[in-house]
Every structure is written in structure tokens, then in C-alpha cells.
Image 1 (cartoon, rainbow, N blue to C red):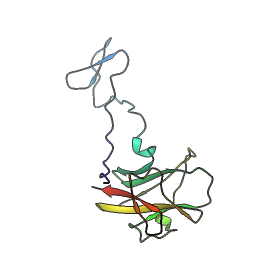
Image 2 (cartoon, rainbow, N blue to C red; image 1 turned 60 degrees about the vertical axis):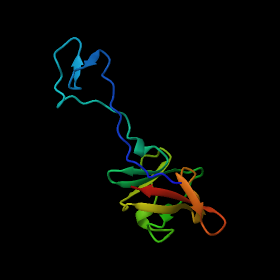
Image 3 (cartoon, helix red, strand yellow; image 1 turned 90 degrees about the vertical axis):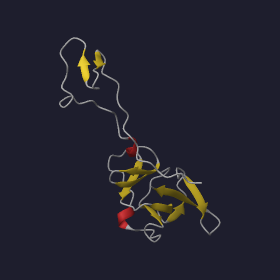
Length: 147
């Protein structure tokens, strides 16, 4: 059974070296006065939805992250959410930062969806799909649920 995707929570970072946590959770530098929690910024690290492979629920919608094994001219996500259109420009995978993770984000309503990747015209199962279902052609579709 496919479990619903959940929005990834940002971890609470530990206090910085040389600091301790105040009772209200703000940082207190051991050698100075309390730091105002409203002005202190702590780098919590990269958002996991930007790098975790497969479909990820984010505040902006479902983000599909795919690492392609070979260079591709055109890569898309297609599925029950876009009438299986294999070249829908709204679902074109892009890698603007060149890190090898191709992504697209789409606003999808709550529901259960089936999908595949289309890489240079070749339909393929996303190896990071959280679930699978028969595609009716002897293969498998990826499956995910938006809560």
C-alpha cells in the first residue's frame, strides 16, 4: 500500500558552538548577553525536498526530483495528473543549478496519482517512486498520494 507523502519538516538545529539554549529556545552566547531570537539567523541546512529523489510534498506543490543516469535532451513527468501527456511543458524536468537532480514542481490536489518519466521519448519507471502499480502494458507506474 502506498503511504501518503508528507511535507518534510525542517529539523531544529542545535545551538551554535559556544552557545546554549535559553528556556524559550533562543540562542544564548555563553560569553555575552542573550541574542534576540527575532534577529538571530541559524542555517538549518538545505531543504530536503530539494535533494530527496522522487515526488516530495512542499508548500509550493509536489516536487518531482529525478537523477538521470545519462544526459537527455528532453525529460518530463507524465501521469494521471496531466492526462498522460508525455511532453507537457508544465511538467518538463530542469536542472538549472547543474547538480544532476532534475526537478519540476506542480500544484496537485489531494489524491492518489500514477506517473512515469519520459526521457527523450522513452517511458520509464521512476526508481525513487514511493509505490508502484501495473501500467497495463506489462510494466509498472510509479504511485504516490498527496494527503
